[in-house]
Length: 210
Image 1 (spheres, rainbow, N blue to C red):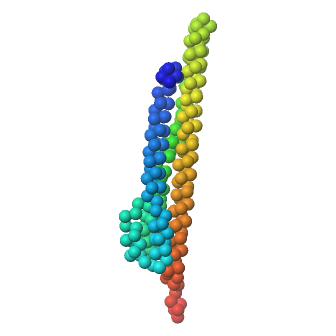
Image 2 (image 1 turned 135 degrees about the vertical axis):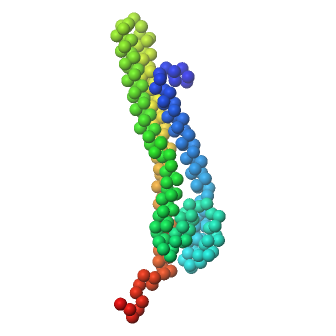
Image 3 (image 1 turned 180 degrees about the vertical axis):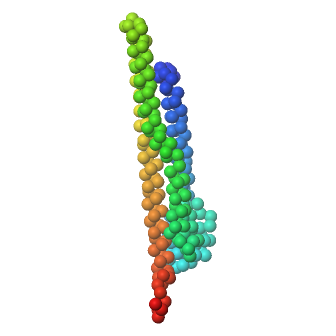
């Protein structure tokens, strides 16, 4: 591996940095989603919605006080601001959670683009080196010429390899975010519907008044 790395030329060093960055972000995101999935409490979410149907806000507060479930946090944020704007409060809380979910995703996206470009850059350098050697020494030193071609192929393969291996976790993490956003929207909408049913006449004019 070291021999291949050194044969790739100077462009292999920025490619190595790219691979380290990608690996670091992937590991961090894996642990992030493990924590997020571990903190999910579907039973509590269902219980909170059931309590909301009866308007038992005090019990909801006690039940959800120590919960780390993001759905619960967002619902509680809406409940706390129910007298003002439940929807906007939940939207603000959801945006904050989604921002955390999408953290470092732009880094992976950048690496998917940059790694192949660096590989192509290394290819160009390798070919230029080969032609320079070929122009100065002709075909008397074929090994020197093939070394430049090898450098071109190694950097291309490395850049493509990094991009390909990054695409899979990138798409997986994106799908996790989309599913989480769908769940947030579903339960936030459910809470708003429940609250509207509890206060059906809140926005209607009083009878006998115009």
